[in-house]
Image (cartoon, rainbow, N blue to C red; front, side, top):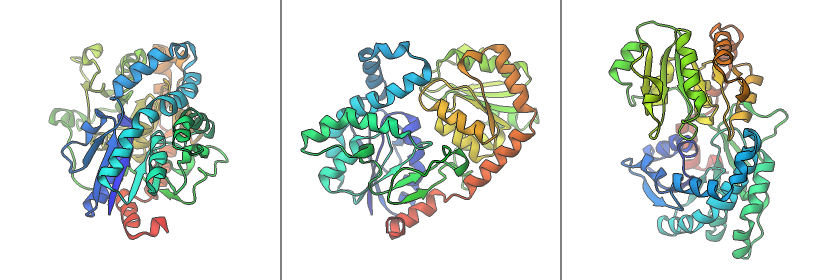
Length: 392
Protein backbone atom coordinates (compact mmCIF):
# COMPACT_ATOMS: atom_id res chain seq x y z
CA UNK A 1 0.00 0.00 0.00
CA UNK A 2 1.13 3.55 -0.75
CA UNK A 3 0.30 6.21 1.83
CA UNK A 4 0.93 9.95 1.95
CA UNK A 5 1.14 11.72 5.30
CA UNK A 6 0.39 15.44 5.45
CA UNK A 7 1.26 17.87 8.25
CA UNK A 8 1.81 21.56 8.76
CA UNK A 9 5.23 22.77 9.90
CA UNK A 10 6.32 22.36 13.49
CA UNK A 11 7.35 19.34 15.51
CA UNK A 12 4.16 19.28 17.56
CA UNK A 13 2.06 18.64 14.46
CA UNK A 14 4.43 16.22 12.72
CA UNK A 15 5.82 14.02 15.48
CA UNK A 16 2.53 12.45 16.69
CA UNK A 17 1.96 11.05 13.18
CA UNK A 18 5.43 9.56 12.83
CA UNK A 19 4.93 6.35 14.89
CA UNK A 20 2.10 5.21 12.60
CA UNK A 21 4.07 6.10 9.46
CA UNK A 22 7.12 4.16 10.65
CA UNK A 23 4.99 1.20 11.73
CA UNK A 24 3.45 1.05 8.26
CA UNK A 25 6.89 1.33 6.73
CA UNK A 26 8.17 -1.56 8.87
CA UNK A 27 5.30 -3.66 7.56
CA UNK A 28 6.45 -3.06 4.00
CA UNK A 29 4.29 -0.15 2.87
CA UNK A 30 5.58 2.84 0.90
CA UNK A 31 5.37 6.12 2.80
CA UNK A 32 5.46 9.66 1.45
CA UNK A 33 5.17 12.87 3.48
CA UNK A 34 4.19 16.39 2.45
CA UNK A 35 4.85 19.27 4.83
CA UNK A 36 6.64 22.59 5.21
CA UNK A 37 10.16 22.40 3.72
CA UNK A 38 12.02 22.75 7.02
CA UNK A 39 9.71 20.31 8.84
CA UNK A 40 10.74 17.60 6.38
CA UNK A 41 14.24 17.71 7.84
CA UNK A 42 12.86 15.80 10.84
CA UNK A 43 12.16 12.88 8.49
CA UNK A 44 15.41 12.87 6.55
CA UNK A 45 17.23 9.56 6.21
CA UNK A 46 14.23 7.40 7.16
CA UNK A 47 13.34 6.10 3.72
CA UNK A 48 10.28 8.34 3.42
CA UNK A 49 9.59 10.16 0.15
CA UNK A 50 9.50 13.88 1.04
CA UNK A 51 7.44 16.58 -0.68
CA UNK A 52 7.61 20.27 0.29
CA UNK A 53 4.48 22.40 0.50
CA UNK A 54 4.17 26.06 1.41
CA UNK A 55 6.63 28.20 3.32
CA UNK A 56 9.00 27.05 6.02
CA UNK A 57 7.81 27.12 9.63
CA UNK A 58 9.55 30.29 10.83
CA UNK A 59 8.86 32.31 7.70
CA UNK A 60 5.14 31.51 7.73
CA UNK A 61 4.74 32.47 11.38
CA UNK A 62 6.84 35.61 11.04
CA UNK A 63 4.68 36.75 8.14
CA UNK A 64 1.53 35.90 10.06
CA UNK A 65 2.59 37.96 13.08
CA UNK A 66 3.37 40.90 10.81
CA UNK A 67 -0.06 40.63 9.17
CA UNK A 68 -1.96 40.35 12.49
CA UNK A 69 -0.21 42.53 15.09
CA UNK A 70 -3.58 43.09 16.80
CA UNK A 71 -3.50 39.52 18.11
CA UNK A 72 -0.60 40.37 20.41
CA UNK A 73 -2.96 42.60 22.41
CA UNK A 74 -5.18 39.66 23.35
CA UNK A 75 -4.94 37.49 26.46
CA UNK A 76 -3.12 34.24 25.67
CA UNK A 77 -6.12 31.90 25.37
CA UNK A 78 -8.15 34.44 23.40
CA UNK A 79 -5.17 34.86 21.09
CA UNK A 80 -5.13 31.12 20.47
CA UNK A 81 -8.81 31.06 19.52
CA UNK A 82 -8.20 33.82 16.97
CA UNK A 83 -4.86 32.49 15.73
CA UNK A 84 -5.88 28.94 14.81
CA UNK A 85 -8.44 29.80 12.12
CA UNK A 86 -6.47 32.70 10.68
CA UNK A 87 -3.10 30.95 10.66
CA UNK A 88 -4.06 27.43 9.61
CA UNK A 89 -7.18 28.24 7.58
CA UNK A 90 -6.40 31.66 6.17
CA UNK A 91 -2.63 31.50 5.73
CA UNK A 92 -1.06 28.03 5.76
CA UNK A 93 -3.77 26.06 3.94
CA UNK A 94 -3.83 28.26 0.80
CA UNK A 95 -0.02 28.30 0.75
CA UNK A 96 0.20 24.50 1.05
CA UNK A 97 -2.50 23.52 -1.44
CA UNK A 98 -0.35 23.52 -4.60
CA UNK A 99 2.36 21.46 -2.91
CA UNK A 100 -0.14 18.92 -1.55
CA UNK A 101 -1.73 18.59 -4.98
CA UNK A 102 1.69 18.06 -6.56
CA UNK A 103 2.63 15.43 -3.96
CA UNK A 104 -0.56 13.45 -4.62
CA UNK A 105 -0.03 13.64 -8.37
CA UNK A 106 3.60 12.46 -8.09
CA UNK A 107 3.30 9.89 -5.27
CA UNK A 108 -0.11 8.51 -6.28
CA UNK A 109 -1.08 7.27 -2.81
CA UNK A 110 -3.97 4.96 -2.04
CA UNK A 111 -4.67 6.73 1.25
CA UNK A 112 -3.70 10.01 2.89
CA UNK A 113 -3.20 10.49 6.64
CA UNK A 114 -3.36 14.15 7.65
CA UNK A 115 -3.41 16.13 10.87
CA UNK A 116 -6.31 18.47 11.73
CA UNK A 117 -4.43 21.71 11.05
CA UNK A 118 -3.49 20.56 7.52
CA UNK A 119 -6.69 21.96 6.05
CA UNK A 120 -5.37 21.85 2.49
CA UNK A 121 -5.47 18.04 2.69
CA UNK A 122 -9.24 17.41 2.43
CA UNK A 123 -9.57 19.77 -0.54
CA UNK A 124 -6.62 18.18 -2.35
CA UNK A 125 -8.06 14.73 -1.68
CA UNK A 126 -11.46 15.83 -2.99
CA UNK A 127 -9.83 17.06 -6.20
CA UNK A 128 -8.01 13.74 -6.67
CA UNK A 129 -10.74 11.37 -5.45
CA UNK A 130 -8.47 10.17 -2.63
CA UNK A 131 -9.60 8.68 0.69
CA UNK A 132 -8.04 10.03 3.86
CA UNK A 133 -7.95 9.72 7.63
CA UNK A 134 -7.45 12.62 10.02
CA UNK A 135 -4.85 11.82 12.68
CA UNK A 136 -5.12 13.91 15.86
CA UNK A 137 -2.02 15.58 17.26
CA UNK A 138 -3.56 16.09 20.70
CA UNK A 139 -7.04 16.49 22.15
CA UNK A 140 -9.83 16.91 19.57
CA UNK A 141 -10.02 20.48 18.33
CA UNK A 142 -12.96 22.65 19.43
CA UNK A 143 -15.64 22.67 16.71
CA UNK A 144 -15.69 26.47 16.82
CA UNK A 145 -12.00 26.59 15.87
CA UNK A 146 -12.57 24.33 12.88
CA UNK A 147 -15.66 26.11 11.62
CA UNK A 148 -13.86 29.46 11.77
CA UNK A 149 -10.83 27.98 9.99
CA UNK A 150 -13.10 26.46 7.33
CA UNK A 151 -14.57 29.88 6.62
CA UNK A 152 -11.09 31.33 6.24
CA UNK A 153 -10.18 28.60 3.72
CA UNK A 154 -13.58 28.59 1.96
CA UNK A 155 -12.37 30.80 -0.95
CA UNK A 156 -9.94 28.04 -1.99
CA UNK A 157 -12.79 25.51 -2.12
CA UNK A 158 -14.89 27.99 -4.08
CA UNK A 159 -12.04 28.56 -6.55
CA UNK A 160 -12.41 24.88 -7.52
CA UNK A 161 -16.21 25.07 -7.77
CA UNK A 162 -16.78 23.38 -4.40
CA UNK A 163 -18.54 24.41 -1.21
CA UNK A 164 -16.42 24.18 1.90
CA UNK A 165 -17.74 21.23 3.98
CA UNK A 166 -18.36 21.26 7.71
CA UNK A 167 -15.17 21.09 9.80
CA UNK A 168 -13.17 21.58 6.61
CA UNK A 169 -14.03 18.03 5.54
CA UNK A 170 -11.51 16.69 8.04
CA UNK A 171 -13.59 13.78 9.32
CA UNK A 172 -15.16 12.54 6.11
CA UNK A 173 -13.52 9.09 6.16
CA UNK A 174 -12.44 8.68 9.78
CA UNK A 175 -10.55 10.06 12.74
CA UNK A 176 -7.54 8.63 14.58
CA UNK A 177 -7.92 9.83 18.17
CA UNK A 178 -4.79 9.80 20.33
CA UNK A 179 -6.41 11.28 23.47
CA UNK A 180 -7.39 8.80 26.23
CA UNK A 181 -10.97 8.84 27.55
CA UNK A 182 -10.15 10.76 30.74
CA UNK A 183 -8.75 13.68 28.75
CA UNK A 184 -11.71 14.02 26.40
CA UNK A 185 -13.85 17.14 26.96
CA UNK A 186 -16.87 16.49 29.22
CA UNK A 187 -19.81 15.13 27.24
CA UNK A 188 -17.64 14.93 24.13
CA UNK A 189 -18.80 12.29 21.66
CA UNK A 190 -15.79 12.78 19.41
CA UNK A 191 -15.57 14.39 15.98
CA UNK A 192 -18.45 13.53 13.61
CA UNK A 193 -16.50 10.88 11.74
CA UNK A 194 -17.93 7.65 10.26
CA UNK A 195 -15.32 5.75 12.26
CA UNK A 196 -13.07 6.58 15.19
CA UNK A 197 -9.80 4.73 15.60
CA UNK A 198 -7.95 4.93 18.92
CA UNK A 199 -4.15 5.11 18.90
CA UNK A 200 -1.47 5.56 21.54
CA UNK A 201 1.58 6.91 19.67
CA UNK A 202 3.45 7.44 22.98
CA UNK A 203 3.55 3.85 24.22
CA UNK A 204 6.68 3.26 26.32
CA UNK A 205 9.36 2.00 24.00
CA UNK A 206 9.78 -1.76 23.80
CA UNK A 207 12.45 -1.82 21.10
CA UNK A 208 15.85 -0.17 21.19
CA UNK A 209 15.92 3.49 20.22
CA UNK A 210 18.13 6.55 20.68
CA UNK A 211 19.89 6.34 24.02
CA UNK A 212 20.32 9.16 26.51
CA UNK A 213 23.71 10.89 26.58
CA UNK A 214 25.95 8.84 28.84
CA UNK A 215 26.61 11.63 31.36
CA UNK A 216 22.90 12.36 31.70
CA UNK A 217 22.08 8.69 32.12
CA UNK A 218 24.60 8.40 34.96
CA UNK A 219 23.21 11.48 36.70
CA UNK A 220 19.63 10.24 36.52
CA UNK A 221 20.61 6.82 37.79
CA UNK A 222 22.43 8.27 40.82
CA UNK A 223 19.26 8.14 42.90
CA UNK A 224 18.66 11.85 43.48
CA UNK A 225 14.93 12.64 43.57
CA UNK A 226 12.80 14.13 42.22
CA UNK A 227 14.06 13.76 38.66
CA UNK A 228 12.16 16.28 36.57
CA UNK A 229 11.87 16.95 32.86
CA UNK A 230 11.18 20.59 31.97
CA UNK A 231 10.24 21.60 28.44
CA UNK A 232 8.32 24.34 26.65
CA UNK A 233 8.57 22.60 23.29
CA UNK A 234 9.95 24.21 20.15
CA UNK A 235 7.66 27.23 19.73
CA UNK A 236 7.32 28.65 23.26
CA UNK A 237 10.90 27.84 24.28
CA UNK A 238 11.90 31.49 24.74
CA UNK A 239 9.22 32.36 27.28
CA UNK A 240 10.50 33.82 30.59
CA UNK A 241 8.47 31.26 32.55
CA UNK A 242 10.78 28.50 31.32
CA UNK A 243 13.78 30.02 33.11
CA UNK A 244 11.68 30.90 36.16
CA UNK A 245 10.50 27.29 36.40
CA UNK A 246 14.06 25.97 36.14
CA UNK A 247 15.22 28.15 39.03
CA UNK A 248 12.22 27.20 41.15
CA UNK A 249 12.73 23.48 40.59
CA UNK A 250 16.47 23.65 41.31
CA UNK A 251 15.67 25.51 44.52
CA UNK A 252 13.61 22.50 45.59
CA UNK A 253 16.54 20.14 45.01
CA UNK A 254 15.32 18.56 41.78
CA UNK A 255 17.61 16.77 39.36
CA UNK A 256 16.48 18.77 36.36
CA UNK A 257 16.64 18.04 32.63
CA UNK A 258 15.71 20.99 30.40
CA UNK A 259 15.31 20.95 26.63
CA UNK A 260 15.40 24.30 24.81
CA UNK A 261 14.95 23.36 21.14
CA UNK A 262 17.17 23.98 18.15
CA UNK A 263 16.90 27.78 18.44
CA UNK A 264 16.91 27.98 22.24
CA UNK A 265 19.75 29.45 24.30
CA UNK A 266 21.20 27.06 26.90
CA UNK A 267 23.15 29.93 28.47
CA UNK A 268 19.91 31.42 29.82
CA UNK A 269 19.99 28.70 32.47
CA UNK A 270 23.57 28.98 33.77
CA UNK A 271 24.02 25.35 32.69
CA UNK A 272 27.15 24.85 34.82
CA UNK A 273 24.95 24.57 37.94
CA UNK A 274 24.89 21.16 39.63
CA UNK A 275 21.79 19.02 39.08
CA UNK A 276 20.95 21.00 35.91
CA UNK A 277 21.21 19.32 32.50
CA UNK A 278 20.36 21.58 29.56
CA UNK A 279 20.07 20.12 26.06
CA UNK A 280 18.66 21.36 22.80
CA UNK A 281 16.95 18.02 22.22
CA UNK A 282 16.55 14.77 24.13
CA UNK A 283 14.57 11.82 22.83
CA UNK A 284 11.46 12.02 25.01
CA UNK A 285 10.74 8.30 24.84
CA UNK A 286 14.20 7.57 26.23
CA UNK A 287 14.06 10.25 28.93
CA UNK A 288 10.59 9.85 30.45
CA UNK A 289 11.15 6.38 31.96
CA UNK A 290 13.95 7.96 34.03
CA UNK A 291 11.78 10.80 35.41
CA UNK A 292 9.49 11.28 38.39
CA UNK A 293 7.54 14.28 37.09
CA UNK A 294 7.20 16.58 34.08
CA UNK A 295 6.86 20.36 34.05
CA UNK A 296 5.82 21.87 30.73
CA UNK A 297 3.82 24.43 28.80
CA UNK A 298 1.12 21.83 28.19
CA UNK A 299 1.86 21.14 24.53
CA UNK A 300 0.07 17.99 23.42
CA UNK A 301 3.19 15.95 22.65
CA UNK A 302 4.80 16.57 26.03
CA UNK A 303 1.57 16.21 27.97
CA UNK A 304 0.45 12.96 26.31
CA UNK A 305 3.97 11.53 26.38
CA UNK A 306 4.19 12.13 30.14
CA UNK A 307 0.68 10.72 30.60
CA UNK A 308 1.62 7.52 28.76
CA UNK A 309 4.48 7.02 31.23
CA UNK A 310 2.29 7.62 34.29
CA UNK A 311 4.07 10.81 35.37
CA UNK A 312 2.36 13.58 37.38
CA UNK A 313 2.62 16.94 35.65
CA UNK A 314 2.84 20.63 36.40
CA UNK A 315 1.50 22.64 33.47
CA UNK A 316 2.35 26.30 32.85
CA UNK A 317 0.17 27.18 29.83
CA UNK A 318 1.49 29.80 27.43
CA UNK A 319 -0.82 29.74 24.39
CA UNK A 320 -2.06 27.51 21.54
CA UNK A 321 -3.84 24.41 22.93
CA UNK A 322 -2.08 24.57 26.31
CA UNK A 323 -5.04 25.88 28.30
CA UNK A 324 -7.44 23.22 27.02
CA UNK A 325 -4.86 20.50 27.63
CA UNK A 326 -4.12 21.80 31.12
CA UNK A 327 -7.77 21.86 32.12
CA UNK A 328 -8.26 18.31 30.88
CA UNK A 329 -5.23 17.05 32.81
CA UNK A 330 -6.32 18.82 35.99
CA UNK A 331 -9.86 17.43 35.63
CA UNK A 332 -8.34 13.94 35.43
CA UNK A 333 -6.45 14.66 38.66
CA UNK A 334 -3.07 13.85 37.10
CA UNK A 335 -1.47 17.24 37.53
CA UNK A 336 -1.59 20.86 38.56
CA UNK A 337 -1.93 24.03 36.50
CA UNK A 338 -0.30 27.39 37.19
CA UNK A 339 -2.04 30.25 35.41
CA UNK A 340 0.17 32.83 33.64
CA UNK A 341 -0.36 35.48 36.32
CA UNK A 342 0.86 33.04 39.00
CA UNK A 343 3.97 31.86 37.13
CA UNK A 344 6.24 33.65 39.59
CA UNK A 345 9.07 32.13 41.64
CA UNK A 346 6.81 31.77 44.70
CA UNK A 347 3.86 30.44 42.70
CA UNK A 348 5.97 27.88 40.87
CA UNK A 349 7.73 26.64 44.01
CA UNK A 350 4.42 26.20 45.85
CA UNK A 351 2.86 24.25 43.00
CA UNK A 352 5.94 22.07 42.52
CA UNK A 353 6.06 21.20 46.24
CA UNK A 354 2.42 20.14 46.08
CA UNK A 355 3.03 18.00 43.00
CA UNK A 356 6.16 16.35 44.40
CA UNK A 357 4.27 15.33 47.52
CA UNK A 358 2.74 12.59 45.38
CA UNK A 359 -0.53 11.29 46.72
CA UNK A 360 -3.55 11.73 44.47
CA UNK A 361 -1.60 13.20 41.52
CA UNK A 362 0.70 10.21 41.20
CA UNK A 363 -2.21 7.78 41.52
CA UNK A 364 -4.26 9.61 38.87
CA UNK A 365 -1.26 9.72 36.57
CA UNK A 366 -0.92 5.94 36.83
CA UNK A 367 -4.60 5.54 35.99
CA UNK A 368 -4.15 7.74 32.94
CA UNK A 369 -1.19 5.64 31.83
CA UNK A 370 -3.31 2.49 32.17
CA UNK A 371 -5.96 4.04 29.90
CA UNK A 372 -3.35 4.84 27.28
CA UNK A 373 -1.78 1.40 27.56
CA UNK A 374 -5.18 -0.09 26.69
CA UNK A 375 -5.30 1.88 23.44
CA UNK A 376 -3.87 0.21 20.31
CA UNK A 377 -0.28 1.00 19.47
CA UNK A 378 1.06 2.07 16.09
CA UNK A 379 1.87 -1.47 14.92
CA UNK A 380 -1.65 -2.71 15.67
CA UNK A 381 -3.31 0.19 13.87
CA UNK A 382 -0.93 -0.16 10.92
CA UNK A 383 -1.96 -3.79 10.54
CA UNK A 384 -5.65 -2.85 10.71
CA UNK A 385 -5.18 -0.22 8.02
CA UNK A 386 -3.24 -2.61 5.82
CA UNK A 387 -5.80 -5.43 5.97
CA UNK A 388 -8.71 -3.05 5.54
CA UNK A 389 -10.45 -3.74 8.87
CA UNK A 390 -9.88 -0.16 10.06
CA UNK A 391 -11.56 1.25 6.98
CA UNK A 392 -14.36 -1.29 6.54
